[in-house]
Amino acid sequence: MHLSRLTLRHFRNLGTQDLELPPEGVAIVGDNAQGKSNLLEAIYYLETFRSFRGARDEQLVAFGEEVFRVTGDLAADVGEVPPVQVTAAYQKRGKRKKITVDGVEPERVGDALGRVAAVVFSPADVELVSGGPGERRRYLDIVLSLSVPGYLRALQEFRKILVRRNAALKDEQPGGVVMAWDQGLVRSGAAVAAARREWIETRCDAFREYYAAVSGGAGARMAYRSSVHLDGARSAEEVAEAYRDALVASAERERRNGTTVVGPHRDEVVLRLENEGDELDLRDYGSGGQRRTAALALRLVEARTIRETRSQEPLILLDDVFAELDGGRSERVLELMEREETGQVVLTAPKESDVRIRRDALPRWRISAGKVSA
Ligand code: ATP
Ligand code: MG
Image (cartoon, rainbow, N blue to C red; front, side):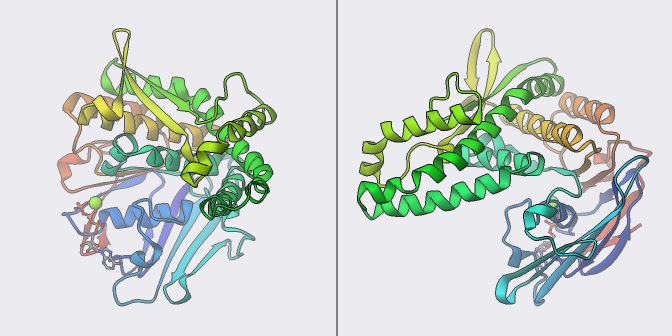
């Protein structure tokens, strides 16, 4: 599957454009503030229907306009699912978002997620490692929503119930009112926690392997640390049981704090450096380059997940990623990507000399004031 055509209308500074993309991808070179990241943001919008930069939808509408629209045509490669067209439009007034797949609006947005099979690598990814636990939970939630059937629904249900339960705790409602939410909280929360843990456990080796490959042999580890003692709990049933026990055990603390203190909303992904038998938290002790390397490894694991769960080569979007890595690391990332990713690559860089991946194989485009030219 590859993105064969991208049609844009009033998305950020990109104006109205109709671009045909080569199956191998393209390298887009342009000065700062010309629209390179905006273009990748538009493409990735078709994957998750959100900005990968965390912008609100109204920020994506071109200044002075009312509606943006992005359409992607995905063409099938040999032996794949048939071609598909995904469209996303957003209207400021009434905050209306409309998604269509082959012209048909899906029953829920979740049904249209992940069609592009894209992964974005961006300098801001370092926040996955440097930022708070919420950043890593968000990463997991996106990856799992796109790869595990039912995950998104469980997550949405969990969040809804959590809000209500927290409101009851905050208002110091009687225990029975709070407990009325417990069954739903435990069911949805256990599904979320079990999927996250299973994903981390099965991708831990891949993370280690990528970290070592990029760093030139250093050790690093990724683990799921749950606020619920999961110990031997394996099945969704067992995890639910453990969650139920944890709620009972924390009843007094949550009364005191006026909020639910255990559950997937408090869980953490820990990333550690391994150093001669010692372990150091990357967030607290990692250098800038070590954190960048770990962030890259997380994105590479994400790409591998797409390859494994959707049997599709991921579309790799590279937003000026080599700028801040040292020479050795950049070379090894390049080698790795050349080896692993045989799919389409859309790369942006401010300078010709930063276009390194598939140097001669990728056509070169320019972007200036939002306009792309071949
Ligand atoms: P850099 O090399 O610095 O990362 P870039 O080419 O990636 O630059 P973008 O982040 O794509 O630049 O932004 C390009 C321009 O888009 C900015 O000057 C910004 O002011 C403009 N812009 C952002 N949002 C909108 C919008 N809603 N409407 C019009 N222009 C916008
Ligand atoms: Mg940019």
